[in-house]
Image 1 (tube, rainbow, N blue to C red):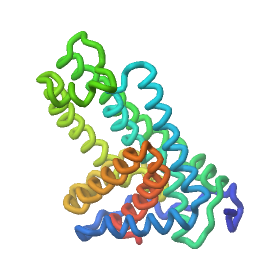
Image 2: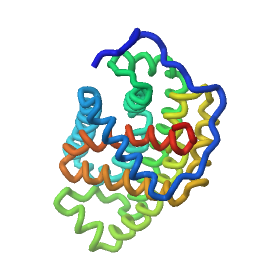
Image 3: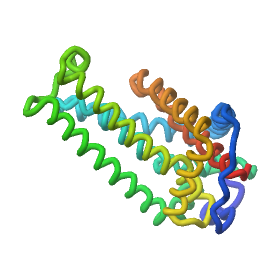
Length: 266
């Protein structure tokens, strides 16, 4: 799809100040998904390629873990992979933003907006990457705590080990609880941060603060949104990652509309 104006021109910003967070209805996430679905099929040439690349990366990590006999690490690695999702979806936010304005989107437009916001996006990405590395270190430590020097369970015995042995069940319970805490932190700081960095002249710290405030101001709606994201991505994974081709761009586009409504700018 070709742009309606100079592709190399940087996209304009909405303002210099961070917008105020507003209350939204509990069922607002369903509207975000509907809007994201419309955006996805309005630009399938780009959106589905985004999803396909995301699915391909997931397959690469799965294959690498299988070949290295470290398949049990798929769960913490998947959690960290999703943690980095908001930064990877920046092109999807730009598609939705330009569609709101009645503008078409090309790969050149996406490249231009990434260059324009590169330093702040990179800084936020580093923050998420550090959180991801910390989470992986904790996951390794938890495995050593419950399994000692034992090797990773094989793919055939993974489920039975986690559910029907004391050390496996302990790791599953404690790992899930600790992982949920990491997920909560990551979700709170990234719920609307990247769309805001793309749309406003704000720094990374301000974007994170506003994102946390959005979660605190709308706990019911944001809990529903988190559950919907988890469910959609889980369905994508259960299809051997093929479904991520649609799931990832759907969530990305919908996240833009979440940002717009949560900041009262739509």
